[in-house]
Structure formats: C-alpha cells, structure tokens
Image (cartoon, rainbow, N blue to C red; front, side, top):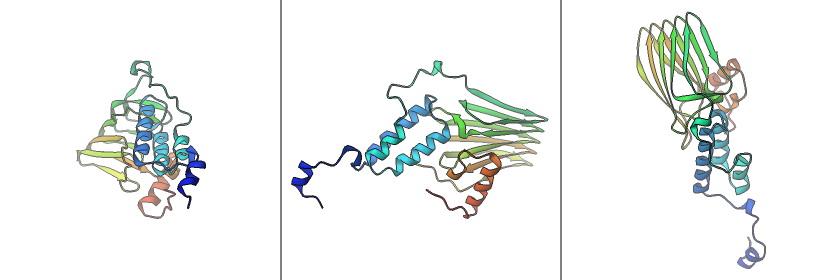
Length: 220
C-alpha cells in the first residue's frame, strides 16, 4: 500500500482513478441526451449504459463517450421526420434498421401483422408510448431487456404476450409505455438479452427463449 509521501510524489494517473456513482450517473445523463439528439440508437444507448454502470476507472468511463461530441444536441426541428404509424391491413409490415420514433407511435393490425424492431430506433429522452390496436391480427415488438416497459390495455378474445427474460431495467433506463388493445387478435412484446445485439430476429427470439428459461449464460 502506498504511503502518503509516495502518493504526493507519484500521483495515480487520471485514467486509473476510481469513479463514483455520481460520475456514472452523469455519464448516463450524457448518453441519454446524445440518444435524444439521434446520435445513438436504443440498443447503442443500452450497450453503452451497461458499460458505464460497470466502469471502475475514469478510463473505463471515458471510452463510453469518446466518439460523442461535447457540444449541445441540435434543435428538434433539425432532426429527421419521426415515424408515427405502423399499419398492416390484410397483410404484413416489418420495420427494422435505424429510424426516429415519435414520442407517441400507433400500430394498427387488421387481419395482418406488424413486426417492429425498436433496437435501432432513436427515441426522445422522455421515452416512448406505443398504442397497439389488433383486430384479427397483431403486432410484435422487440426491445432490449434493460429498457423499462409498462404494459396496459385490454383484450377481447385475444391477448397480449410478453416473452424473453423477466423485467430488469437498468437505473435511469428509457420508459416504453405499451397500450395494447386486442379484438380476436394479439400483440407480443419480446425482451431481448444483450447477446442478441446485431443478430436477426429469429436468432434473437431463440436467445430470448433461452434467457426466459434460465438456459442462457449471460455476460452481464
């Protein structure tokens, strides 16, 4: 163990200093702001937030924001047009890849189905509300399992199903509110583990099934 004199003459390098909870929280706030500005997708936000929460030194914490600019995020009117509706009538629709979601998104599935992968979506810091209407059809939503999810609504001759590992949102995680209304149809919400990042939907569902059965050895 170093003596006081040794610490004065041989100070610990800045990057090796241990970080505090307040420093981790400050980094999480920066990540949320950058995600709201469109620089990070939902999955990228959750991946970096996980690294920030696990950071032990300032060097660890710096790597999380190293490629992000320090200036304030751009004004909302300079961002891409947000998506507000997903519609499938007697057919199907699929949305994958990067897109900006409005603060409120509506999904309508009538004798058809919507498949919406939110992992590459850009969402506002205030979170996201999804209103899902299923009539003899339904929507399938995919989310990182570290996101905070609230599900409400009602079903008549149908139902809403949750799949994947149980809820375990990280501190300060974005809140996704899902209002599910089903008539002879159903909506499914998949919570996907970190191991599913970058994988296709079929492989991601397989990993989520393993996780909900406790058969997936997570690297958390």
